[in-house]
Length: 302
Image (tube, rainbow, N blue to C red):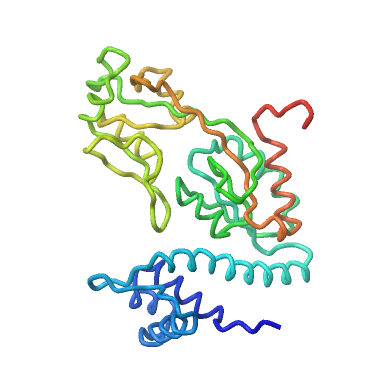
């Protein structure tokens, strides 16, 4: 039988050093001494005969081999967590707590009927509803931080059920300079104005999507703040149409047509990061979300 040379704790420490940005920060988060973390990573590298970290300036960064090993190690530590969590669920009838991560763009009007139906059947389970956006929502899936996640895409290696189409429109105040420009607006002209951007909620944000050419950008954490700024005649922003429809209808905000883009449509998906580990409460909540979905399915799936 194969006897592993490394331990789960060593891999967990390596992950913490990378995730928290260094040995000192990881030591504080893990409540361990910095020297013990240095020793654990050094021992891991010696046993594997692979250089995982190298010092650049005053910071330890992953080597190319370290990137690969770290990524694979996350599957290892997560599988152990899932296995132990499964044992807990096997020994109980109903989860004491269920976590649902919801992308900010998802209409709450679709979520409220689900919660109303879930409450009478919840058997006292505590429900955590956590707002995330962009990479933050994806992290909740890839790092198994929630029982269920509603996200605007399905990360590689996971499965998801489509539950709604979300339209995004580019808007500004009706009296903003952009509102009086001839359509379609040149993107180079648009880049000269203030852009309001919704902050990525990930610990390590990755700006890999969206139009971000404007050098003058303000970042906010909520759609409400972005809308408040627009109503003060400041900037432009891509926002879910359902959040600004009333303001457009009454003339306070206007939608802009940009050369090459009129509006964006995204599909919201329901993803279960650990499908083999769903307790009865999570299964019920999943069933209710799918029941209240607003999307046309192929007739063969009805």
